[in-house]
Amino acid sequence: MTDRPQTQDAANSMWGGRFAAGPDAIMEAINASIGFDRRLYAQDIRGSRAHAAMLAAQGIISDSDAKAIGEGLLTVLSEIEAGDFPFRTALEDIHMNVEARLKEIIGEPAGRLHTGRSRNDQVATDFRLWVRDQCDAAIEGLQALIRAALSQAEAGADWVMPGFTHLQTAQPVTWGHHMMAYVEMFGRDLSRFRDARARMNESPLGAAALAGTGYPIDRFATAKALDFDRPMANSLDAVSDRDFALEFLSAASICAVHLSRLAEELVIWSSAQFRFVSMSDKWSTGSSIMPQKRNPDAAELIRAKIGRILGATVALFTVMKGLPLAYSKDMQEDKEQVFDAADSLMLALAAMAGMLSDLTANREKMEAAASAGFSTATDLADWLVREAGLPFRDAHHVTGTLVALAEGRGVDLPDLTLAEMQSVHAAITEDVFGVLGVHNSVASRQSYGGTAPDQVRAQINRWKEKLA
Ligand code: ARG
Image (cartoon, rainbow, N blue to C red):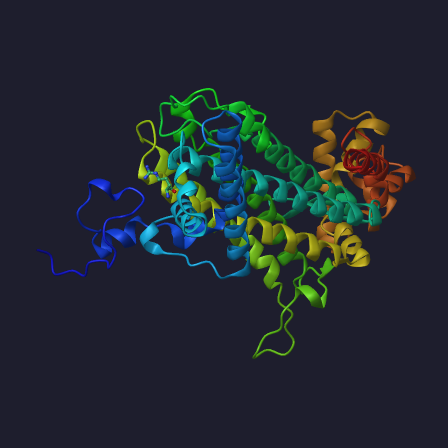
């Protein structure tokens, strides 16, 4: 005999027919999921109502039993929503908690609800419905974020800022162009969640434990009632598949990478050394010791959320790999990961949309920075190719010499005199100054998708139409 405490309950009333004793307390602790899967209550009740209605329509249970079940489940729903539902760990999970309470409320007909179904297809259905809702929430959150980035882009379609590679000033770009790069990234995220949603929109309900059922159920009817496109075509797959959760987590991970990269830029740009942007008070915090500080905490936390989201993704992939068909209890470990990742993602999306909407881009600071660091050197080289007929490699070399000259004098390229320029290459004329300013530089990059304000505005309009 073990001296560990036993649970007070006798054998589980839901499945304990062949059991003489209740579980060890530690068994109960490791087995129970009610602590977290209670979040599936609305989906569980919705699925059960659809199932009961179908059972009656097929003549498998009586109309009066189905009516009692349907109404009783609504009572359970309102109890849970009112916060006075007696959740019991001994009943393991949300499915058995709901059913046991239904029995207390309506009596015997409750026992007919589980006809032609198993907790395996039940949990697969509930969780799919929940993740499907999260895809919709992510899509909505991304649309709001894209709108915020679009308004920034529109306001500053021709504001010049340094474009970076290796975080070294490379060529001037516009603020609008930079914002639109994120619109493209978040746009791909949006389509990933849409794709995942479309693929997951099949109903596992009626797959029963794993093999289907001998009752004349109508899986198409329950699929329709739950707004699924169709029932899943293989009952083994239906109860063992968690691709929908993996796809959601994968899309969430990529989206979190994008959020993290933008957050990082906001942290850099809001620093005293850059001051490209000012975060509104609503999205900044102070320091308890250094009165001068304005910290970009929200951006930093968004930057960090990828840790949790990717962690959840790796965790669920690890749980699923190597599981034999069909259902294994390992799969109960899917929910907390997805719950946490979804919560983190929705919060990060909302915070980024808010932060971006309330952000002020500092046009003068960005333009001054864009003009520094010889950012129009490529324009000078291109001018030498175009106007003086030099091969690009020679033009590159001449420009390099001019940059070294300017650097030695402590000035920028447009500050060199014509005579100084001609001392490096005789073909240079006064016209060269026309391409050296940052505004000339960005205006000239008219290639499709380039940084010229016209191009940026064309992309903004395309996105606005797309979102309308
Ligand atoms: N709580 C379980 C889960 O989340 C429900 C399915 C239980 N099925 C079973 N055969 N024990 O996976």
